[in-house]
Amino acid sequence: MSEQGIAAGFSRLAPFYDAAGMLILGGALQRAQLCFIGEMTWSKALILGGGTGLSLKALLRSQSRGVVCFAEPAPAMLRRARRRVADQPGERVRFVAGGIESIDPSEQFDLVCTHFFLDLFADSSARDLMRRIDRQLLPGGGWHYADFEYPRRGLRRWPSKAFIQSLYAAFRLLCGIEARRLPNCGALFEELGYDMTGQSLRAGGMITTRIYRKPTANID
Ligand SMILES: C[S@@+](CC[C@H](N)C(=O)[O-])C[C@H]1O[C@@H](n2cnc3c(N)ncnc32)[C@H](O)[C@@H]1O
Image (cartoon, rainbow, N blue to C red; front, side, top):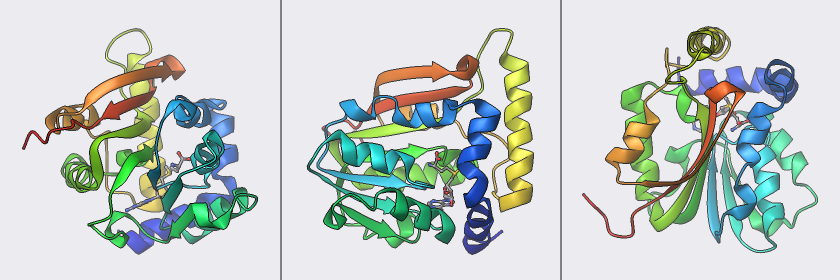
């Protein structure tokens, strides 16, 4: 499906998105996004695929200074995010109705947040996307990453895998996303030379929050 088709699918889900997540995973999706957010230091942040703006609000409240670019292609998600931060000074947020391709490639950020976003993409698209994001992150910058992952071991490994695959079936049907399984983002961060400086797991290891740090000298 086209990017517009995917955005239209997520727009249709917007009124139920947060409540459905809460109902199905009892707040784990929300907690994963908020974990560590208050510990990040940043002056110019990029939130990609930010949905209804939960992390945007938390980021803005975490410090009184700093500006955020919030990129989200689904119109109804974007409207909800705008409403959520209506009490914040307007000059602190730039809303972009689109993805990374709608952002000037020369613009640089010192923090990037991707929450339950990279999992929409198959491995090769996720790699291209992460490389593009990487070029826009300053050396030493932080990447706040929250997403699903397949637990490596333990009794919950197979039920978790089945649960994640059922989510893929639903999101493929409802939004037309391309991925059929989780991209290996951990390997892609390694490939890019990032250091993981923090990690928190929840929902039996099926949901992870990680802080990655871009190397100060480019390894390419
Ligand atoms: C699963 S939702 C996650 C929303 C939010 N980050 C959260 O965790 O609640 C994925 C979001 O990515 C957005 N999205 C889809 N394709 C995108 C793209 N190419 N670039 C940026 N965002 C995109 C969707 O509209 C949707 O809001």
